[in-house]
Length: 502
Image (cartoon, rainbow, N blue to C red):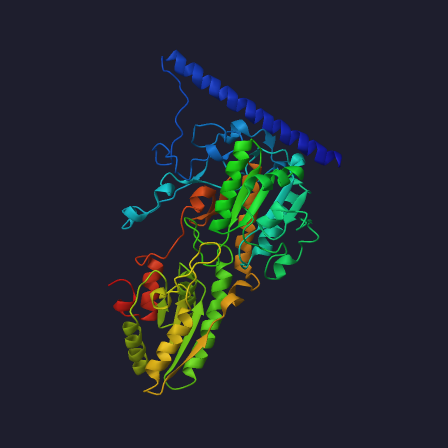
């Protein structure tokens, strides 16, 4: 290195350690002042942003999820400036870089006189710790060996996440030992059968230009967490990034508990993924916007078919087993849909057909977007798959046959389109890629700060740190009283009987 760079590093380290010393002196001064005044100076209870004491289920209760304190019984916020001893190398390369205060909180509830206050998640009441770069970090970057795993089904943006995690580790922290575990947790469990890939900035350079995952996403594999820990330990991995849905993060939480019990210092940071956007607490999941864009184009195809004949009905079935976010947002994005059927709203087929008749009478065509999990009472199979999940019946073909049968007398017909996996295999859209980049970098920063058993995601468009067990606790569903759904009802001119608002 040049003498100028060496001088800059020495100066940065001097400033860092000087700041640490002055913080300790300030603490001693406060203690002396309190003693002189006859005040007992006790360590204050860690408090929420609104002044209330933290509940153990609070998203801000991160002491149990930091490698400096995960073995302790006490909860609260982590005093990172005291326990994180290493200077972030970004501070050396960029002396004017703006770092977070490690105790910055994003308020979970931000609306005054809130009409929906009773329904707001209590876990967010105390706020959430921001997930970005801090000046002090827990890990010595020279000792980090990281791994990335993509689990579950495909989703736009998986390659973007892999790329940006690799680039951030490599360029910002100088970490060059980065493994890509193949076929989900199966590759973590059995690396001999599914050999990991050595990730470098060269072999991830253009992977965001295509869909899917270069690491081959896979389901299952977490039957024996101890076996996975053994394999990670053999490879010297002390940082694991888990990319997947609520099931993936539930498994990651299980792995975190096993590592904690073993006393194995492993940072596990999740980047939640769901094409259905059903990850609880977070604003949205990566890849969702790209899927909605692709779904909107398919809806336009359905519109073209419906408007190209007399009394045409275009029906488009979209992904959404338990939540209808894709169908709702695609309808809002296209503004050519007359009915949206989602799992959250129970409807009667007689009311659907009545709406078909009135819409055709008014404009001679109609477009319906239906989520795959809607109307299951009409097509229930009574079966479960190998993982215990309900096997859903095909509401799309049922709706097509019902509408065709109903229109047979009047001479109308319907056109049915099922894009199926097309919307999840598309290339990431530009804005979505930017979002993936934010998530990936903040996942790395969060891991470097020493957190484990957590996920990163946006609250009010600010990336925060959230315990993985909270993310895995339940799924997010559309609230029929949400502004988004009520806007969808108005945009589609849906009758009250099909809106869920009756």
